[in-house]
Image 1 (tube, rainbow, N blue to C red):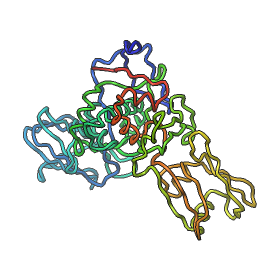
Image 2: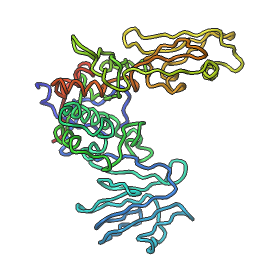
Image 3: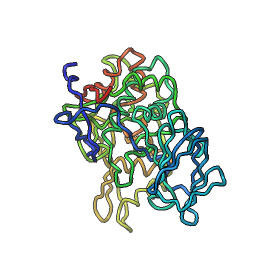
Image 4: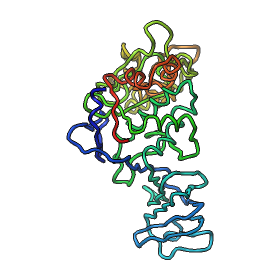
Length: 391
């Protein structure tokens, strides 16, 4: 594509939700970056095993270990660091970094990881562990966690997921720099579990899209995605505060035919909440002692999502954001309506997740219908195009 002629480097900086990484005026990357992933948080103790040669480094120096080793680390009595159950490190201090040689594999509490592992102080107590890993190897562990094990018939959707996950990761580089890492390994960012869940098809998709990311205009996109949209995706401001031009509500269906995600087990759902529980939850959002008189839903007519609930009380009107209602009632999405049913309130809804960006079940159906990864991304992210950061 004509616009692909510019290769770019994304600086390590803290980025806003809407994405602020420009393709202009910045150097090329000569190779892929290393990302720092928080894989254990505030744990009381850890065990790191190396099945071959490796090096332990700290502020006081480096210690080559020319054999397999098991490190047991705990903050007991200051800091205890033991090799193979008997060799105690003298006066250890954090951070500690364990770097394997090219033929050695590291395991954290039994789970295998590519790259290095660094042990740092916990944010409140205990220990944190950060996985320093090349970005493409990181994606080997993310893509199967986010879209499943995969198969040949949905390869285009897996490739689209790889491009989205890479774009998201790079747009979040440095966001937690003060804490010593770039990204969480759970739903706060992207699910990641090292090598434990890697699969053939997902690894192949990552390799096939190496270095490819999505842009809208001249900005790297913050590629949000979710399980099931229910037939139409949401606007970004329906969930968060910012209206992002490329995160617009789109109808998730061909010109003629069923919605792409209609075969998802989360396409439609219902939840019955007892009346007493319903009003008990609402009282959390109004002033103490206020009596609820009535409530109504404000719905985005395009995305069909609940933007907010307006609650009238004897102390005035109060608004509850749709995403807050979803959390409070444990709902799958903000696409719902509420009706009285017996001695309860029935939530009748669609979809699973925030609804913004790529619908994963929809993407898989598009792949089955012969759509490419590029076409899938252009469908879910308005004005998006694909560029390569490195080879």
